[in-house]
Image 1 (cartoon, rainbow, N blue to C red):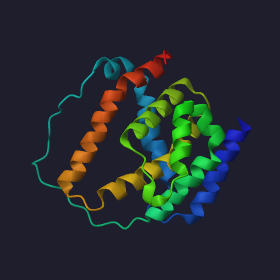
Image 2 (image 1 turned 135 degrees about the horizontal axis):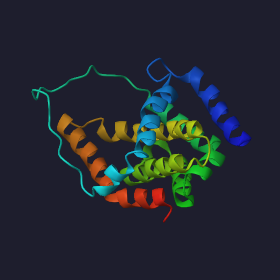
Image 3 (image 1 turned 90 degrees about the vertical axis):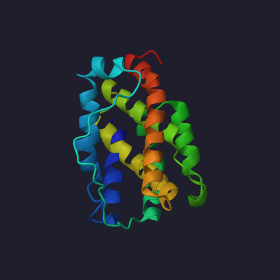
Image 4 (image 1 turned 30 degrees about the horizontal axis):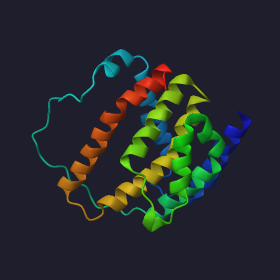
Length: 197
């Protein structure tokens, strides 16, 4: 447990001075969003585990398109922070993730920037294994959420690279493809959750 805390604290203190204001509190944001999501899975297990397919929900807007100002993001920094996070958090990741997932993260962390891809299936497996580890409290739940931050940076890097020349419709389709991958792999989350995998 001490090694886990030291690895997380080291990564947090090492990362903060290098972040710009838009990403300075990624861990805090993840505590609020991912932590809340993982926590909410427990009391709602019967509801979300019972549905095999996604369900349509009513749209409450007038159908207007939302546009955002262009945002400059330092992709090299995202990639570097993913790489250092995977290296520095090995003891933590080995407690949270399955050996095949850790091995695949190590493999992609060794790739050069132009070869790197944190694909949909690996990302879905990663998130599901994190959720199941949170449920089982394999280590401090706060440390589990914090350990996801560098991996999220690697996924964000891939998303930005894959979509840098894409239209809005193409980006939406890519997000839909990720959702379909998550839906397809949902039985693995349930198996992990129930301890049958």
